[in-house]
Image (tube, rainbow, N blue to C red; front, side):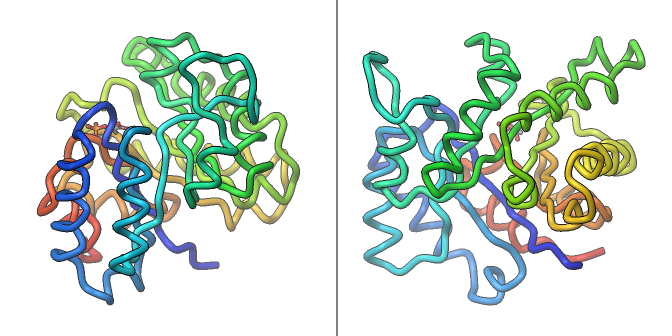
Length: 256
Ligand code: PEP
């Protein structure tokens, strides 16, 4: 079964809505129709920019999938400052990142909370990109596989079998995010293969449909090698997605 890679730009807390519009326009200018035939491309602006980017994508018929970086698990309620999946759905958002390591570390998100968010994202007809990944301490202590396995099982715990074949998992070793250090293609492949077998054990044969992204300092120079790996089906890109030429270079990677 061939899986269409998903390449996602996580803009984090960067760019105001004017800058965001410029970036998406430049990106669209850099890419060609055949690029979108090989891969799906999602952009994940901060909440304040989503409406502006939705309007531009729609008006200029761009081929980007609109994404968000987070959401609350509830559809509405007394949660000051939060944004609900129902609001994102209304903005034509298709993919929502949940459980990014920055949110796990800085906002105390647990696997249980990530599982509730992933379930709610599906309930609102969007697809969650569920992030998992070990710290340097875990890797050096030989615990990387066990930690990631626990995160995968915990974060997907509330999903149905059908949802387990549609979910996207982003394997992002914490030590590789924003550091310029990338996991070797072989190490990334080994972990993504492990993740696929963990999901297969819960789900059965449809694990072949599951898309697993690699994230952690992906750039124009390492994208092709990573994406050539059998169990890597795309990339979650932070820093390099903030510049149109570098993100376009990743999207149009040449197969090795
Ligand atoms: C990320 O934000 O998920 C990420 C992988 O960032 P970077 O590409 O900058 O390491």
